[in-house]
Image (cartoon, rainbow, N blue to C red):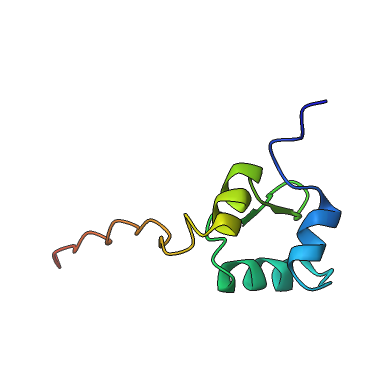
Length: 78
């Protein structure tokens, strides 16, 4: 059987040291280098791609930073 492309809630909880609250889970994951973890707008649960989690676990993706957002344009006063 092929594993799910995302980690289950139990797998996320185990990575986060047992935290159950999604905001604390997300903060912990980001601190551990899982910068691609995010919260679902529909359910509020933490989503973490299995491929990214495995890469960070191997030490291949831990040093990367989250992509920077474009700076807001500077508007002229009218």
